[in-house]
Image 1: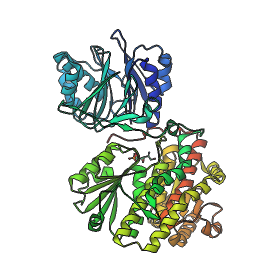
Image 2: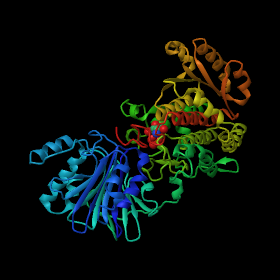
Image 3: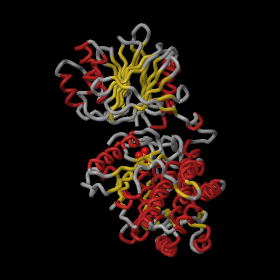
Length: 612
Ligand code: AGP
């Protein structure tokens, strides 16, 4: 996902912009650039393909660019390949307007033709350059950059977070937002915009989230926000209370390893604050017992790892609630004519709260009358703000592209929601409820116990890091957990893998198992352990090299057949995936490390995918 940062104040802008962009690197990008207006009204644009260091070296860390107002951008290519020309900021042909953009303008071709018909030339393949030239067109026509911005946002269609500077206005920049995140940061004698607070938290914790259709005019001493109809509005200000170190590596080699290690504490913060006297307290929930009793069906909608949380959740919630739970990929839900009505509860899961597919599915479900309850990690994010109810995971900022602590906190919170509903519906007995709460309170410590002993996983990673294809097989909750283990491995080590329901192997895929094929056999779901064992024998008979994952109580049995076994502590069935996923995360991490991959910023990936 692209990253935007903007600054106006008394200090030189370029070093501040570079620092902000560096803190947005985790979002994934392929080029970067800045635009700064000098006191002499010169609009300087510097941009380059590749890592931020390339740009920084070109401008001597910002020293060679003079001016106290500027915008910066890290680009994750959508229209046009990654290169210097397609990089942002884009400059208008007359050199007066520079723009950075996150999102997609859907009618850019039509607008480009309109401008070409009026003599405008284009040098890039991007939709953003069209916005820039359209701004220049209206600015030339009306002579006021503010009016020109409104003419543009009433003309363009699609998603945009825009940072705009004009050479004729060296004391202000303009921001506009629709369907792509953008926030305003209020400093002392300076002000900011940013795609997320990570970019500017070292300067200010005092922020406002821009809403769709809003335009902000920002100077060093003032911020004025307008709604889509150009009416001035007052913005609610929020205080960001997490510390800067949360967005630092803290001595770990990678953010991903740090965040794997943070999982026990993240679960404590997410869960324990919602348990009082062994009862789950969800004060933030608007839905009441009558509504819960009236739920006819639950849809869980998400993408990627958040979807995998939903797959685990389906098994657990259906067991606890005895109501139908359907899990659907957000990108599929939108176009599947879903069976949703006023009695459908839609649970939307998203770490970033900005995933466009998930946001669009949310809006589709809402239009069909569903109640939207979202589980989100980023406070104030778009999905959170468009939901009827939101339960925040308190995992803290997750920087690594490959999610770990957010996945784990989402999963725990979803299980808690199921337990909370089950208690109200009477489908979970008092004794079962207490047993689950007791186990939940022990979960972080069990996870910490595992995280203290990772040498066996490093050893197994050294055995298998050269494999080109891996199968994760499991049944029921093990299958659901395997989906996440497989994605972790694919995402960061670039090894092809797939998770397969063990019982389904014999219906085709087992033909792929041959001598030396690595099969990671997941046997932590106790009720089907014997079945898991027979599937191990099944693949070994075809030459598979099996790495097994099971609980301590089943380890001896598994070792009768499998030499390489990873064990996890016993837990209540619904929490077993929360423990089992940790060694799978670590296995992926150590394999990727041995393969020399860019673990925190895997190729082609973004931390939050705000494009279709
Ligand atoms: C997971 O490691 C990936 N980063 C990706 O699958 C991610 O889970 C997916 O894009 C959904 O993101 P969200 O949770 O922010 O909506």
